[in-house]
Image (cartoon, rainbow, N blue to C red; front, side):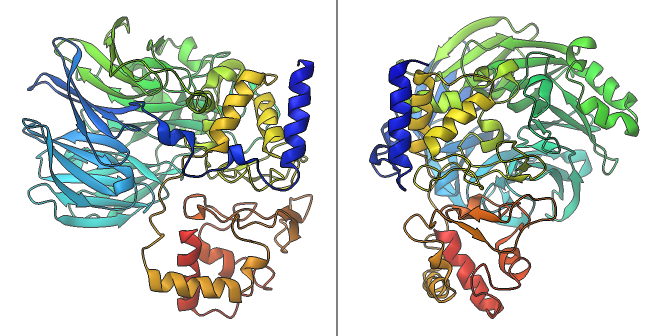
Length: 602
């Protein structure tokens, strides 16, 4: 490390340790991401009938239309705020689009390329799927933790079903009358009755973390989901060979309750970080999986994969999930670079034999040979724009190439938005045998020190340590970009801010009456000090922990330093018997609900 960089490190560290963040790193209306003009393609939908590919551009809130014959953009349309997914109507005349921050589904008429209808659903709608008969649209609402069923004839609500945390991707099994949903912040798959909305099964998915795309085989015998294999049962002492995070697919026999077999897609010294989307070819010969952290697509031999799953006995499931050599040893397929950065959504043009891949960070679409992965073309969505420092930090945060052997990125534990995976990790920076809940990084800059035990004086030191945790000495260039990204978090609009204004005001009064503000001091809602709340678990080495900020707590559960409280209610009813964590034991149920409404609004 050069002398000038050491001086900069010490100087910034000193300023941050004074108790607040440097103004340049504060999150406000001048945040650099507000100036973004990138497309950030996230999801694709393809119409053979119309000869068009529809690209959902996340950060530009737009739709790009690509002509399949010329492989060029022909039309564009402004959409609602931060669209996430899209699905065609049965006659392919309309496109249904989920808009994350407008909490709605928009209907786009594809002839006129105009938004012709819209309907409010749950908070942060993400994944969509259409019923085989085209009469129902299913929506996974990521923050509401619900799945909504809509009638496509008039967009009326058929049902709204509560599921596990952060439902994200969804598919229908029409012959079985089910829909299947991956829950990104819970280790379970939700199987729901497609007509009544009744939850049929919550299937445990072993060591799954941040599961995303899901597909069914044509016989509907199997479901296949993509996700991280999180070894949070281990002490985080070894980066190599997937001992912390590995990556793969979760294969489940639909008619066998509880069945789940995990197959890693990693190579021994080359991880397959951050699986995102899955797609199966119509001939059932290939499974495609985008590996967003290493900028590749895995071309998997589907019959081989299913034969492996079928032959894996129950007592070998765990061993297989840890076998990071199996993909190469059994020649299950190959991994191919997309020619872009951050591949996420996919679409397949079976007629032309072309796989299209949305490259989030290079703002383009890769056209790859669907059989061998040869790159045929890269379709630009607009003029190439220079990557800002903030955008480069976002790329690095999601890029496993800065990790030794490429097994994980920062986003593997903090999602792509720098929040949390909801798991407890035993980091050795404060001793072994005391796992603690992964914290969101959104409030780390202005609430030093960092980590539950305060082992890092400030975020500058924390980001440097994080890069060393990835296996590399931090470089000045990378460090500056990561600090810019983490220091200006892209906060989602809070859906609870004005949900019930009267209850919010009552909850605010209870917050102060219960003396919550003594430790959770506005505006950061942290006093940046250690406290003993009597919550020390039997396995822990210490009892005093730093006060976390309450901002965005509605999206960062589970709660408490060890993640024991799954809900707000459990914080106060189950884990605060002696009123050490606020004077809440005397609150009525109605008062507690008002307090929770206020906490959600912060």
